[in-house]
Length: 496
Image (cartoon, rainbow, N blue to C red; front, side, top):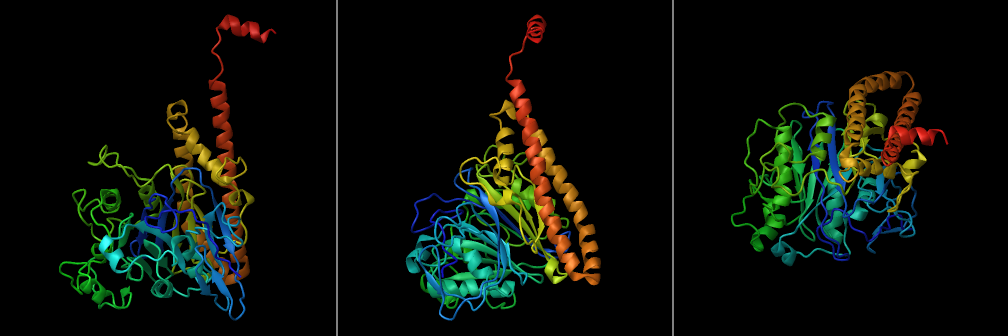
């Protein structure tokens, strides 16, 4: 049995030994529960690709019972022992996930399992040549396209998820240098894999946040702080022996500098921009070698604040016209913001704000993780246009609102749809949570069913709105191509 077969296509990957694709990029924000306005722990990320026509599908995977001795065959051929029973989890996968191999599940990118462990993977990064020489990446090891389902189907907590992924990397090696996010209802962790077998993870402080682009970020950590820091065995000796740092310090360890490429403006521009948006009181000059790993926000971070960060460009900043890589790009496939609520019933603790398509052209829609099904439109779409696909309908709104179509005439209408939808949904979410908690005390099954139906209904209603807006734009666009007749000529046409 091999439920983790994956495609060889590469997203958000800077180094892979099997595919020659160029590095892609993602942008992330992780926030502690006291740093967020909702009181939830927050994971978020843009999933960017090499082209702008790569559809994503929503997926729900049930628990699976395995037999003793069963093995999971991952996309790159790596075989790992199957658990006795896998956990139910949700994901957002590539359109060809179930067709490129027997069992599929390609690039699931994010999800939450039935034990309320959330994961977003990955932010790819470059490896330092010296680190790669000392501990080469392993092409037949753990890679982005297969790690999400592998971990979520087994992890019992965020800390356990970190350890499980770390153990896999230690045993089988990693094929990529990358960053991974984990959370449960108690804590959030950010993990980086720096070489073939070495990794580090840090607990995000409750009152702070971290932003990540596509460079390794972990620095300034105490290796002896076992409550807040986890890492591969022998990490310190490896760094010292191979002289990956000039003056290594166990109390102020710089994992990013030892294993990655720091100071690359492709990444630091986005780090600077994101921190500027969330902590504007801190005046930092652009294009520094490294930026603070953790910061306190000037105000509690709302869902729409993170949405703004994930869509941000450099207009109004000193990097306008200089920086080449904004947070929000046209080749984005989807984006997600996962909220893990400590004060909600366990079945309703995970809320996933998911964009149906490109982050710039589709709204974040809140989905409770107890959803039983998703509308058919969210399971359709390939790399070819499909009018029945939710991904393509929202992506088409982006195309129709671009400069190439009537000089962005329809861009305000698309932006208005996003802003209105997200503002209304964010405003109503706290009231909905309160109602669900009260209902749960009286009837647990009714509360869970309501949350599932509500999420499903939001997906359908927002799809319907997008279809209507698309029709309105196409009608107006079609009429705009008609010849402008003189009154006399038009009168003659009417009389025919």
